[in-house]
Amino acid sequence: MSIVEYLQSLAKEVGRLLASLKANNTLRKTKKIHIKRHIKELEYKNGRIVRCVELFFPIIREEWDWRYLSDVINKIRSSSLYEKNIQKISEEYSISEQQADVYLSKFVHECMKCFLNNNPNKVIEVIFTFLNDLEDGTREWKVKAFIKGIGLEAEKIKISKNALLRKPTPSDFEEETPLDVPIFNKLTVFPSAILEINLRTKKKALLSIELEKLVIALRLYKICSLFVLETIWQPKSILLPTHIYKTHFNAHLNYTYTIERSEEVHLSKFVNKISSLLPLDENGKLLFSDPCSIAILRYQDALLKSENIENKIAYGIMGLEALYLKADERGELSHRLAQRVAKTIGFLGEQPIKLYTLIKKGYEIRSSFVHGSCLISEKEEKLSSLLENILECLRKSIILFLQLRNYKEKEKFITTIDNSILDDSVATKLKKLLEEILIT
Image: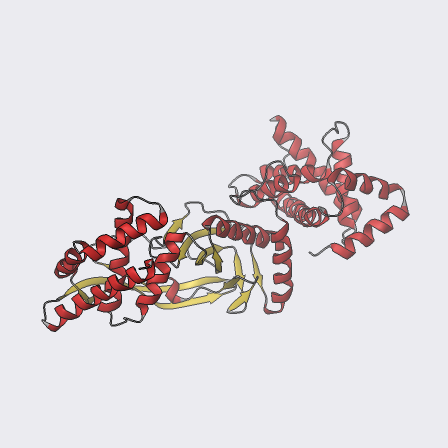
């Protein structure tokens, strides 16, 4: 017999025993009190939840009492058919019989649920899902990330082949919990959007990478202090559990944005292109050896860290240095940096002299931060404006350098920028190149 036939025979035996117990009225149900979290009212306005009225009340659920199913479980586990299934699984997948027993007991429980819920046709799906688990094959994953920082005008917007953003709904927060089980899953901060990913993959790590790419791309689409409150990982599996990861990190939302209905096509194009260019390792982490990675990390530090404005300005300048300065350069760094940023971002429609001035000012603050000197005394609104302008330069520069990676090496591109300052023909060629490849 094949492994499929063994599992089918075992499932039929489970169904036969349960049917016999039902016919003899041996099975019993028990009443359990659950606490239901009900969202009575959810108001979403200007890209965020502005009002949520929630109620908690007890409800009585009738459930099969698993204590009375112990006879079925014991009969199945002591049968020769169960033992043959263990041996077959152990041989086929080169695992110990003890481990095969653990896996098979989970399979039996899933089959019991099918028959108890009058859904015997689902057993076939359970069998093949179980086999896929044993073979460690590709499986469907659903990821739901509760994010803060981005609002939506439309109910939902597709941002890639496998992902969409949508507004939160009451069902995202409603839940039932047995009275004797503590409620751990309650969000204390409401998300402004839900990021959903549906993907068939063998390794969860690939899904983590996909999530990380999308989050970074959304931060780069516009300046945004986007962060993830909670992530729910749900595989189609018998053996793998649903995993919920809650972050204790709560960024200050200095920068947010709302996606308008008309932006869907452009946003999707942007996210797909930028996410495919991000320099990540096999675990979804940015490569520290890559200038674009360093720039993105400094950009995210400025957006998310709870520090004073001067420190954030320093992070922004450090990000620009990672992109626009060569490794062996030592003198006139502030001038070179400001000049290169002004010339490059000037091709995108900004005023070069204005950019030059703000980068020089930011570099002064960065130098004070690095060398431990007293920071420049400025009015907070002026520093806030300076920080936002520097972050916008850094955001555009990261997008630009990511897209230039396949055309020019960093050192050669910097040389081209320097030459374009003195030679109009080089400037014309550089401007044309940026217009052809750049998406912002």
